[in-house]
Length: 186
Image (cartoon, rainbow, N blue to C red; front, side, top):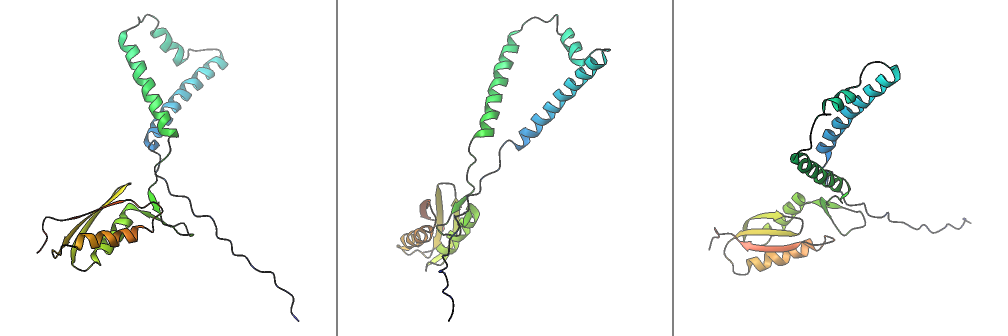
């Protein structure tokens, strides 16, 4: 007599999150880091001078040199421009990053890049009888297929139907446009 076995329940893991684009500020972050490093060196030198009690700090020398300056209109304009640049940099740091892929409706969490979707659509369109050549452009919202065919009048409709059927596997299918190329053979 065998011991009763508990039923195994298979749990499907949640789908993977969609990959996102890299931050646009990677080069700006480097420039800002260098500027902050310069400020840290100035502050460190001023702290060292204050701790030793002798010498003059570079910050103090710069302030003394600017003591006789009068306000100029360009300083205000530069301040506004720098404030706007700062706000733009803050927005770039906190804004949501765009998705770089499209998710396929599947429990495995498969994602396709635009280039892979273009190859997939090209292969699908070329499988339609009468299609000689295709070229596909994929954007975030739309897919545009240009078909060179033997000239059959229903070929564009057939390509549209077949590609639409294939793209229905995507979680959010893009808008599809199919058009004939100028060099179609009749």
